[in-house]
Length: 148
Image (tube, rainbow, N blue to C red; front, side, top):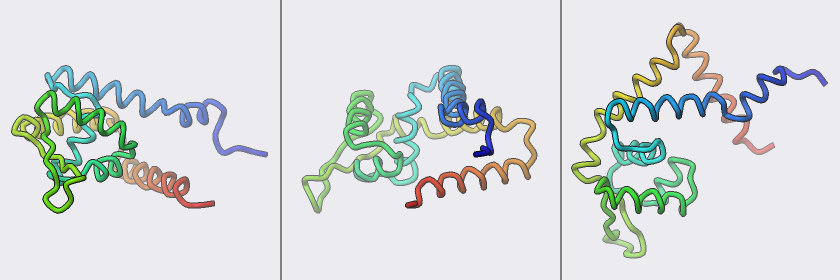
């Protein structure tokens, strides 16, 4: 059977080497801008910056994390005064997650650091290459998410 990727390319893809490099670069960028967040915290905040006051389940769904992982992250973020939990007025079993002023204030510098990281990662790529990259990543994702 002939493969479309070399063994090295397959290894790099399946081990998430690009993702690891992006995460390392993003972490360094956060540090250099004195942004006191981990990548995991940033992913939750990014959802809240778009939709403040959402449920923990929504955060888990949007970030592809399990609920216990989200709970642990939110516990830490609450200790750091980035978010607060409030009982849902319609269903007291649910907690809704809201940004604090401190959590809201991190949006602009964090998004700037993310943009700088993406710019570094895509440097020397043409607009056409970036468009093709986005299209390819989406196609791979959909291929893997669709039932066989």
